[in-house]
Image (cartoon, rainbow, N blue to C red; front, side, top):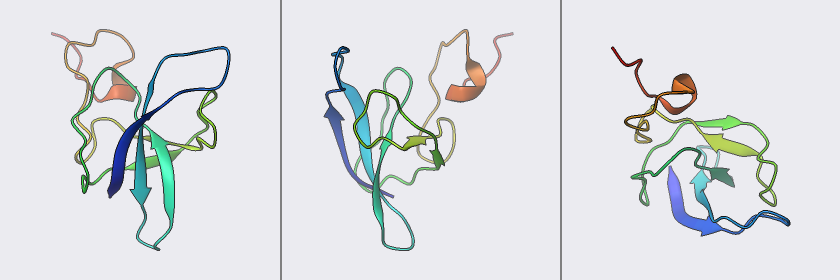
Length: 91
């Protein structure tokens, strides 16, 4: 479950704002997870699925939110890399 939703600046030399959520796990621990893709609708108390994967330019980023599962919606109108962002194949 999302504890907080915020943006974080990455380490040098990149400078774009990265979207990050603080996640409560069922065992009571808290971690940060990056939200990949273009845009999201996550708010506090949204339920998300997290995969353990390193995010290279975020300090302490060791997990990512799985797009297209639970409350983390997929990215609409995405043509490439569909499976990672939960978008369906265009017909």
